[in-house]
Length: 64
Image 1 (tube, one colour):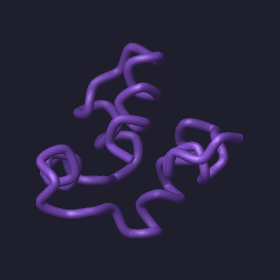
Image 2 (cartoon, rainbow, N blue to C red):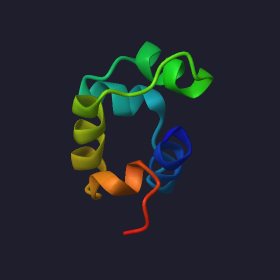
Image 3 (tube, rainbow, N blue to C red):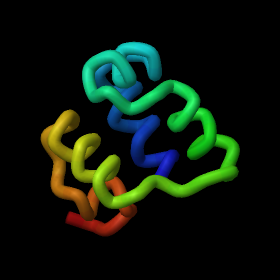
Image 4 (cartoon, rainbow, N blue to C red):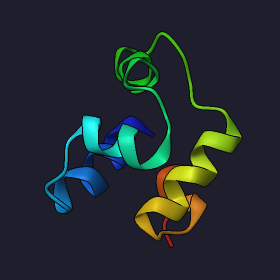
């Protein structure tokens, strides 16, 4: 999931800090996903899908 997130983030030329500010998802949470210490909960995935205006399945790696 983190790879898909970074692809969407980089396509918009924004930083984790900006995503955090815009979505309310803590930067530390994004870092934990990156390191694999935790996996995103559904509520956070929904927030990111809405933020990037993509179907939820895209964040999960499903072909859509």
